[in-house]
Amino acid sequence: MTISLGGLKPDQISHAIWNEGRGHTGDVADGHKITKAPKIPGQPQTNALWSELLTKPPAEQAGILAGHNVVTAFARTDKLNEMTALIGAMPPELRAQILLNADNHAAFGLRNRGKGAEVDAMMAGLQRPARQTVSTETVLSLAGGNQGNPGK
Image (cartoon, rainbow, N blue to C red):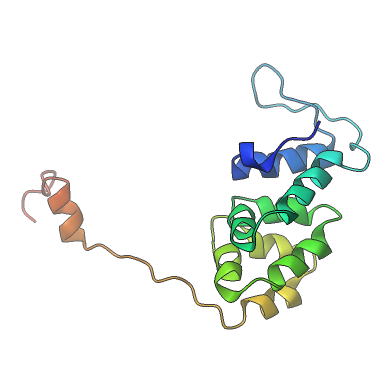
């Protein structure tokens, strides 16, 4: 039942962990309802994914953990403390990649599991990457001008 990190996209990793932890057994034909079952004992898939993650170099670990909901999914397992320590031991640029990415909800997921003080300590001194901004005029010129409102 184990699956490789290398063959999964980040949202697939998080879903694999959540499905195992919740005892989900699959989707019905309409794709919306999930059948509940008892929690899978020992979470073998989660443990295998975690073990594989630990074999990766730090930059690759950070890239995986920066994926959508991956930290939040692992935080709901018995890997919470190990994962918090792993992220905390990473260099600042890798911690920033994980914790300052609003799309992956990592900081929220850790705070939600009682790791607020650890998150604050890990985020201390981190800088968000500069955002690229584009002027409205540039966007309009690339789009062929403001044809919908020629008075502007």
